[in-house]
Amino acid sequence: MNLEGSLIFPMCGDSVLLGRKMRGIGAGFWNGFGGKAESGETIEEGALRELEEEIGIVGAPADLVSAGVIDFHNTRDGEDEIGFRVHIFILKHWGGEPQESEEMKSLTWFPLADLPLHEMRPADCEWMPAVFEGNIIQADVTYAPDKTTLVGGVKMDVVGRWK
Image (cartoon, rainbow, N blue to C red; front, side, top):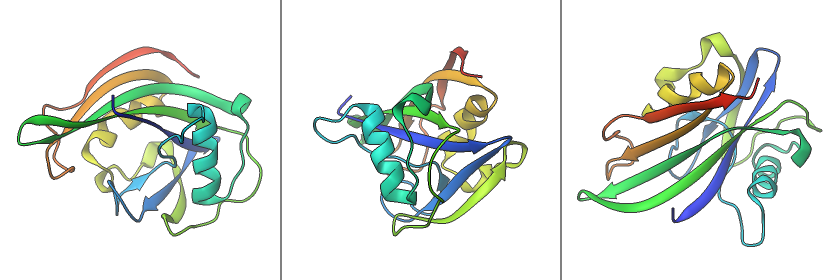
């Protein structure tokens, strides 16, 4: 994998906080919060930094619950262009109130039974429900050069339970 990053999903009871991403890959779609780890950061430190930058809430590494790892690939003319390993975390305890930023807008609490799957990236529609059912997953996802079209579907294994 070329890059490593994270996605955090703040949860309260049977609801998850999602935001509409405003730039980069996935712009316009609902998603969790996160991004690339910076040099010298652990994945957990990077995840919590991104969370604070994107929506202004503060979490502690001890409160992060690992829910899996997804290897994303973006292709160019059939060749592997870039690989991005994303660590998925659930966060149930934090400080502060979520606030919109330039990167994440329309922050909304969604019941887990009513996720806006039709407004998410194609792969998210497949792996996200498995995670919110309490599964720890390992998945592999390949997108076409348009970074929107799935190539070959989501290859996913459930490797444990976080809940």
